[in-house]
Image (cartoon, rainbow, N blue to C red; front, side, top):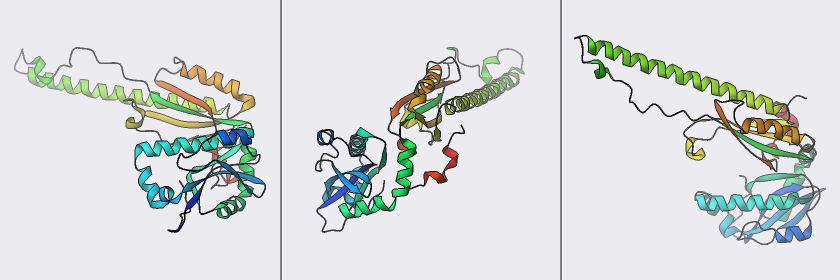
Length: 288
């Protein structure tokens, strides 16, 4: 999130959603909505680029008010959905560079200057993203099979024979625990290797790929750990081969130690960082 905060006397701020070269269809833009508290979406010219913006009240969108609202999950979700609607509206006629959620300026002039100052980078990004979409892929370890209904023997389960039963039973129990831990480590290593294999296979059909931090169990709702949280930039011309490769993994069976989930195509948020020079980030590029 980025913001140029307004002073106390400000009435409205300009919320910017995305940059494009070709302005969206006026009728489509008029039918779209951004933040429910703001005015209609509109196009702001900035040099040879177009910025889709919305006027929003400073009382709700200045730094302190926005920080308070975004700490509430329901408000955060509403802001994220509104931002995505604005980005989608900008993408009607060509590639877009989505801006970070809640990119705010004091007025049109400040917003236009910010875009103009970054025009070389934005032009590079728009060229890079033309006729390409993003696909999100998440790989989890397969859920462990339920243990047998019989509880594992404890050290006292063998205390019914000789006087040395307790000692031998304890050693057997510790041996079983150690074996189970080795099995779990082996299963985790196998799952990690399969997640890497999925990533390597998908990269062969993508223009670029990047990894996000794996999500916690609280966010995924799964007990099995997330091993890979990746995004792939895919050329429209290669979408069929990418999705065919993806289908082999999401159907299961190819790599039994993991479960693969995917979604797309999306506007390529993960590859449109306008605050970074894409020419200086070769690690994201997939060798051709």
